[in-house]
Image 1: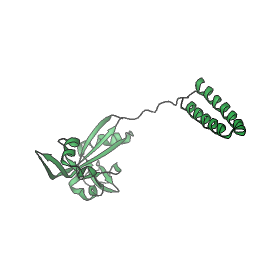
Image 2: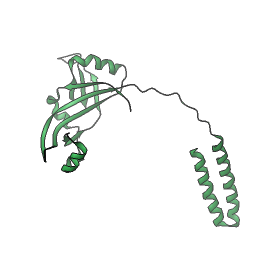
Image 3: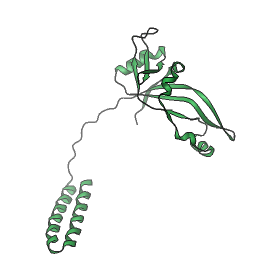
Image 4: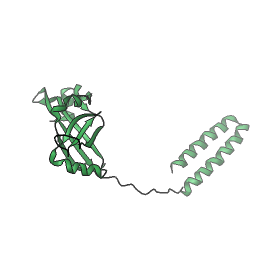
Length: 190
């Protein structure tokens, strides 16, 4: 798994609740029993909706308030902005080609308090993560091992003999063909 090299908490979600709602998918865990919630989530909230979808992250030089703004959007609709003081760093990471992901949490939830399930609503939180770059490994040429070649040759010989045996005794020939295929497949795994 790639290591996170930077994370940025975003702002402005309260102004874009409708766009965030468009990302919502029902979280099946919301239907868990009290005991299941205690086991799976301990002291965490179980949100009614997960927020899934591809979020675009891009500079917004035409922004009237801040030409240095970095906008996060889903299907063309703004969901949040990078904080003003962090926008330059985010633009650098984007320009350098770092991979990124956006996590959206919040909204209606269930939680365990004492012996009861309680419900409530958290404000939305949007976090932008950047990951270290993947390094491409040099292609490796794989040589067939001597054992693999030997088994393949034996499988071919067995197949030819089984075809000849098919003339004399059909059941023996069929068994031989099946065995030859099994030997061949075994040899391919080496």
